[in-house]
Image (cartoon, rainbow, N blue to C red; front, side, top):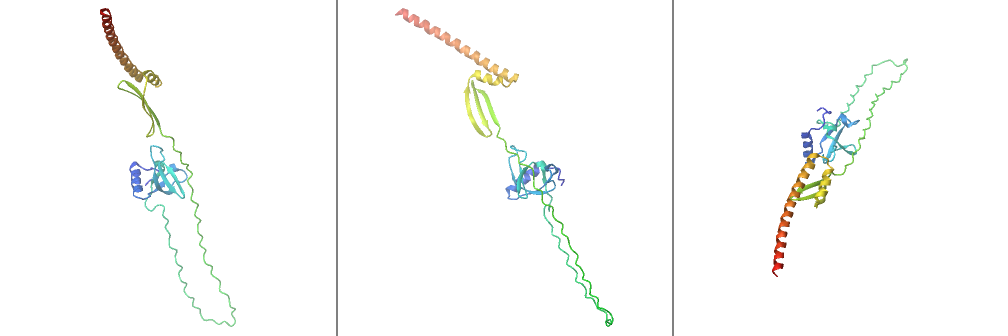
Length: 227
């Protein structure tokens, strides 16, 4: 797998299922992860992707840091495992067969000591620690809703999943001031049409009540004259 592609949606879903089963999938850091590209880590948690793009928490060494799916790729099988190669056993030296010689006039020459070859062990470079700082989570979004239903204007406020203010009734003039802040002609025209219809209905009711009041006053005047 190319370590520069990042995690796909299906791979993120497979990682979430593996975490639910108690496993910690291995991933390899891509080039977008910075200086730790090519290193292998373990996914330990998936946070809410709606809150932050870096919702894949990876354990790398002693650190557990969040990364985005573009910073990671699924590690190939066997990645991150050290293979210990067996050391070759030295072959036994064949005993030297000394030939008979006349040693009366020949000085004894001490045998040269055979030095064993030194095996230098390459020092392993220290693992680079991740330098990517975790981004702090911001506050949840705030939603303020102005609604009209059954002849009443209401306002409600909600932050995330928490209701800050339940819908309460406001005056039409206050609703018109709130809509004026939006500066959208279509919204303002809709509100003005609603207010115009309410105004016409209120005038009709007032005219009807005035006519009924006039009839009552006329009846009252007749009763007074009769008495």
